Image (cartoon, chains in turn blue, brown):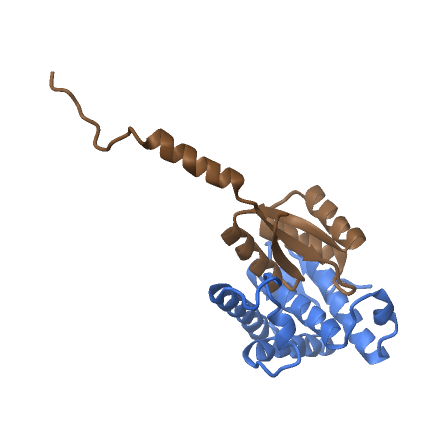
Length: 142
Length: 103
């Protein structure tokens, strides 16, 4: 399989995604950004899982920090989704936002273990595989 | 030659220092726990650990394998505020992470 991301000698990361790949990335990044700002979004709960499950509510500063950082990463990923080359900070924003999208998809579809994952809808499984391929490619160059 | 007096009273330093050390020693540390999930690629977990904690490749791989085989791993232990900060960073990176006080 051709590499989706290539680290160049000058340190930049070349994005080799085609139009369809970029459309999937843009949609995933956009959903994370919207979910972070919309308490009714099906991904919002995953994005705001408690830090300390023994407490009813997390430290407000920690909640704010998480929402702000997740939102910033998603925003940067959306802003650079058409770029031919990424720097390290941009590639990190892509990886974290895509990973958030991947896990939120799994939680929203009740895919909590290998068995439920195997039995999931083909379309959901295909979407998960595509995001995993993107993540493998990014992890190789970071 | 005039005598030089210390600018602060040092007579209580030993007591307060000992008291502070005892407090640090007796407080149970907070653990940052990362939980397994069925979709996150192993390679991604290693990259995230390396980036957030600065651990070696070997240590990151060992921690990732512990998460994979045992369902969870303690990836850092220490003061509550730093544990919370690390936990937020792991969650922002998309991993399932929580904190718990050492039992």
